Amino acid sequence: MFFHREVKKKIQQSIQQGYDTLICTPERLMHQSIKRCPEGSRKVSVAIPHWNRGALIHRPLWNIVNDERIEEIVIVDDGSSEEEFSLLVKNVARYDRRKVVTIHRREENKGVQFTKVECVEKICGAWMILLDSDNTLFPSYLDAVVALQHLDEKSLYCPDWAFPYFWFRQVAGQKIDFQKACYLIQQGTLQKISLLNDGNYFFHKATYLAQLLPLKQIQHDVADVMLANYRWLSQGGSLTVMQQARYLHRIDDSSFWMRTSQESRRRVMSIFDRFKNNLPWDGPFASTII
Image (cartoon, rainbow, N blue to C red; front, top):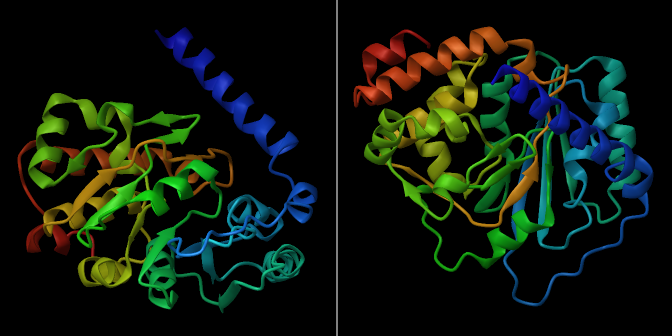
């Protein structure tokens, strides 16, 4: 079993590296054509929390900066080094031919959770995507978003594949509320597929802030997405897993997850235990983290 896991991991890493070497490169982004938006198509906003990835900002901008369905991209920098911030500004200027990107600079590093919420606050549009700065949306993700017929403001719309690592096909097309999440965790389903550890969702800005603004106080947390999903579901929200909505998920040495993998696992397991026991977010739990 261990041998098969290691082989699978190496294959996945090779796929990720091949994509970055052959497809998602700065040079190819410079020559990427503008994808025209049919009249009447849904327009969405994208927020990107950023820290020390100025040289790699082409990764999250790939497939969105030249797509007319994206009406604004907001980047909030969480106190990057002067060198990385200079690279961020320089590279965005090179790639942003449609002039849709806005960069906000904060000199103090306040952590991924704080920065994510601040990103959401700075978006002008009503509906938006929160995209990690080390990931890349595939066209299928935007296709699925604009094809949604009835938008539920209390739902976070999730991808069905964080390619090539995490495939959520067991729950594709489903709407998951707190009780269903508890059931799927008691079954062991959600632990195996890592859905609650994922992010990069499409959602209603105002509802997101109404439910998750208190998380800004936490600033740093080793399982920020899991924590946000736990609070969201506890407050009556749901997760809707879109079908055929995919993005490239990267795991490398620059990832927040990689730098805190052991601590992150402990936090994730503690939240899974609360789900198993049907315990929603409450004051005593909040006092342990805020």
